Image (cartoon, rainbow, N blue to C red; front, top):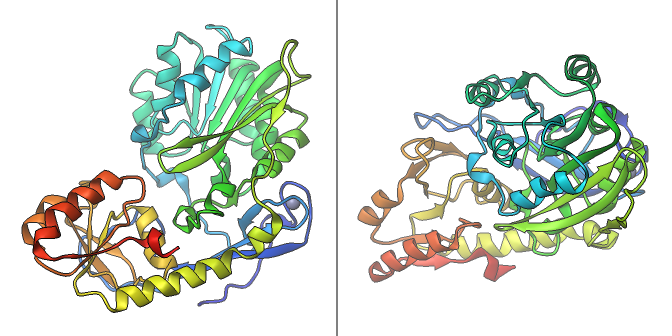
Length: 402
Ligand SMILES: [Zn+2]
């Protein structure tokens, strides 16, 4: 592995939540390319990057270790999330009214992406909406649909500009954005500074405690600088002067998220604060790497004996993470994915791996091994495995080796 020189992060070396300076190792691996990069031609891979996560001994926050943060510029990233609207979207939108946000009150979405969520808010009758989105392509896609979009990063300066132009907000919604930003304290403070007294902040992030018991390290990826657990999220929001009122955990497909409703001021009359707590113990964080390494070794041993070609199902970041982190990065011969951005191209693992559509795979594969690596899409795995069973294709289910 390449050793980077440790340089101070956004919070120096200290924890962005509690200022603690004692961290324990949580997870370490390497990967061959940042997410979202697919090759037209089978070019040789360049050097891998280290993914190094550590846990704050004081508050349990997990983060990319100071000095090992993966740097990304979201101005030029254009990954739409239209297909990722959770089944509990209406519950989030319905909570606006519950917290006293009327149809003409200003609602801001930080990290508006292509406007998918904001359009759902608009359809529910809210008329005074502003989205904040750094990606030029996504901001333009959202704006072309009549949404009011501020293109740029959301920080203290942006909050001042938005307040000058639109006034204080009744609600600020921030979904799956906080875990991507280098300065978590600045972002949450900027959200708090936008709110009118009594205003609502809604923040949603992946729940790090979900990846621990089930050994779901494929959910760890280079774009996530911070991995919140319930305690660290509530503490970060509380430190901005906001009062967490509800902190829930909700499942979506094969992931689980933390959803935190907070207000500027006291808990509203008639409500009681209900705040989820951490779901794993510090010792479980400390043992994670050991458990993962043992699992990865079992899987590699199984794959080493498997007939070739070895085919992985899926070529998204979760699958590439999985093959990188298990050390199967030089053992996969072929990937299958029907996304037109991927099918026909190559995925940059230790060597470039061709990506085929399901249709092509089913028409051509007559031996070898399938790895059930689709994760959120077991019915897709079943379809492929059932169709190829008559040809004696071997099947490996990683979960069975955990
Ligand atoms: Zn901490």
